[in-house]
Image (tube, rainbow, N blue to C red):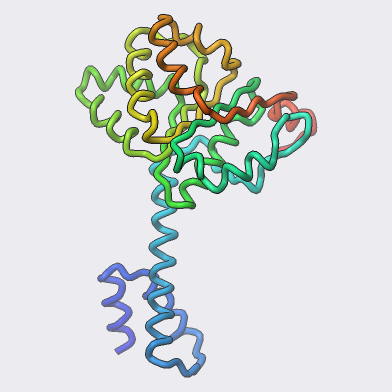
Length: 246
């Protein structure tokens, strides 16, 4: 009878209940539970399993560059990172308020890791997140114009609570990329949060976007009321190599 019950749970995709009931049977303990305690235990196990699988799926869909966590971040005074500021971001109120975070600093300083860590945390809080490397994203959107997938891809980005744009400004924007950037920024303005990382200081973004009128419109939407993290110090990659760390 128990084997049949387990099989029915599996077929009904009640994986949390299945696991909890199976563990209970295999433990061999003859604890006495009231009917409501048994139901509460199985329901809690199923809820937790679905919650965890939902988080795992959100992380998978986000396609992060790094498997990064807030707890592993490196807070050294020479990096100019305010730990209290990072901790404030973990309540995800910036997402609720549709605010932006702009992270700048030299290569290897940890910008992408911080962005990914905040993104992972947002997923754990139930938010939909997507990560994109900027040059690859706009190359993909150009291809989308040719093969008809552009609207679908832009729509997918628009549905996310948080968009992470990594490596912004590595190369100047041409006209199609500039138009696509304007569309993405306009769609998210007041409707979704944005994290941007860049090797360039924000004062240089106008030049890399090009075409003054469009650049003004884009930056007005990105920078207004944005939180800024201006990282400093030497490359963490160089530091690890110098110390013979893995």
